[in-house]
Length: 232
Length: 232
Image 1 (cartoon, chains in turn cyan, green):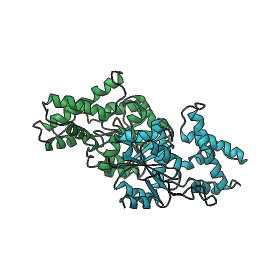
Image 2 (cartoon, rainbow over the protein chains, first blue to last red):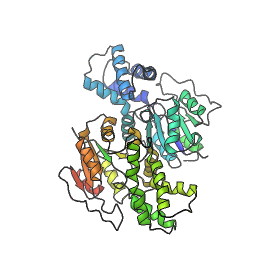
Image 3 (cartoon, one colour):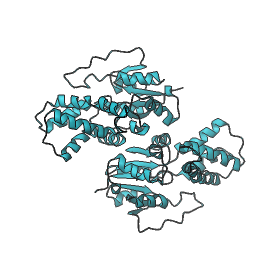
Image 4 (cartoon, rainbow over the protein chains, first blue to last red):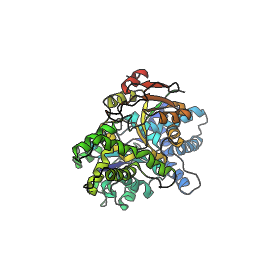
């Protein structure tokens, strides 16, 4: 059973959420530490999804979760001057995240040999606008929104294989988060870890870059992954 | 409210299903009229969807409907020599349909000004493989599979607007089928009719090419539509 589909985690793996949010917040002159603001916004993400998973909230798109978290973070940072329109625009920064420098070329190389898709908790509209803005050449955008489950629920990983009518081991998850990869590995998918040591910004070097025995590939970046897969 | 998203019907509008199926069946030397075979296969499509809509069948992907219809058509044409593998491969001809000659360049032009998406009853895997094979540069592949409704159910047309968090009139359906366009028009979407007079093959020139008062655009092909929209 040959490998056919590479499914990519997006936030952190393909795009630099911390750097992009820091950059936009810096330009808004909000009198806050933009690095801390970016971190706080992202920190609200897993707790917000947990509220959906527990049934406290109905099914909610990430755009709407991001907005709920943003309102809390603005309060936390004492920012009360933004209009509703300004808040809506700031929330769409997630649609404008910049790709890591190796990402577009690496994806193009990988696309020449495999079908490349997203597997992200981001909603479809967000991922489509991000791809258009950052020139990400996806063959297909798959999202929690399609499966009505967030990662790491099994429906998402197995849903990629079902979408293409192939076996789980013909799909490889490419991600920089080991919890995401481990969930995919346990369901029979192949896994590739990609190092993104500065995902959390220049002052918080990630400490979890060590090679794991259970991953199939460990790559510095997408160009390195393409080389290892013979797709460059 | 400006136009933002062009949603394309696919079978017949973007790709030449009749020509592609005729070509593949011709090469199989099945001792049938390939033109009639292509027509018969497609003729089974709306009745098969009606069986799902009525509840007689559960939710079913078009790949599986196509296979059910194929088995009937093979019987009808007296073909009993194909193996299961050969039938499965023939069924995937729908993943390999060729684009109309103007389609790729027209889509590239339209993509420079609008977000271009599919809105097809084809399933996601089918549409993704078709796009990869025929170089269709979609910003997003949307399908009946995402909305769990086939066109012309309202959930599909309104689902495009909801995906991008915009109003229905900011979406335009581009299609060669007037029933599809009329359903979208009634829900407030803009509509563009595209002439595909040979959709049903060289011997069945379509007779419904006249301009309708209720469509917003009427185009010879995608290049003509791009000119009319100032996107060339």
